[in-house]
Amino acid sequence: MAMAREEIFRKVQGVLVDALSVEEEQVTGSATLSGDLGAESIDYLDIMFQIEKAFGIKIPKGELFPDNSQNLLKDPNFVQNGKVTPQGLAELKRRMPHVDLSRVEKDPDVNKMSELFTVDAIVNYLEGKLNG
Image (cartoon, rainbow, N blue to C red):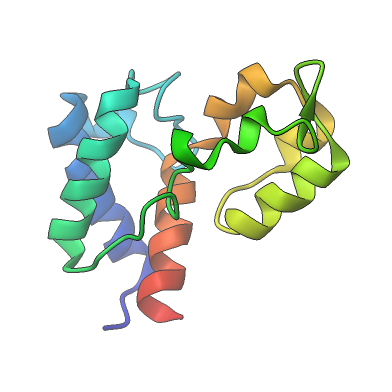
């Protein structure tokens, strides 16, 4: 079921336009789901379900977006004083290889974690899932 990156992007773009009621032009690769596209926590579930439907796949819980049940950001080994620890960064890389974590490496402020969830992160995830 291999798909070209551009085709994956176009489908993701359609999902996000529908799920978030945004304009197609707003959905760029670097657009963040929360900051740029206005996604709220409930929207992440809707986006995941719509992606599953659009691509005919099943996304295991917490694989695309970490969920609260994993408590990753509440584990003192991974976060201390509001900052992601080196061990936490390693765990994020393990759990979310599709996400560009260079921002966390530069500024480990846990409050900026939502900036990691970009359109490109979704496309990277799907590219690995579909073509891996």
